[in-house]
Amino acid sequence: MKVDHWSLVAKCLGELINVSQVLRSIHVGLLCVQRHPEDRPTMTSVILMLGSDGPLPSPKEPGFCVGECTKDSAHSYGISSNNDLSISILDGR
Picture (cartoon, helix red, strand yellow):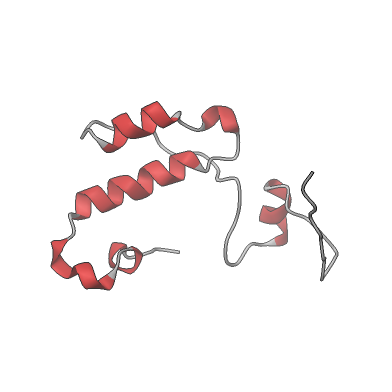
């Protein structure tokens, strides 16, 4: 699924957005949600990546799937359930 960068920013910003900054922010966001924590950047790295124009590493597999996920992709992400409805009550200590 291809997403247009205009659909990811507030419409009220109109032409005021810097497309390269928006795309860089999305790229860094993808790096932050990689499946394995050791593949995710530290917050120091995130700040440096957002504040520079240098090359960014390619993101790996994300830790979750949104939208249409096939059963095979759900298993690869560890998201598998036969339960159609779950209710969990969380009670803090």
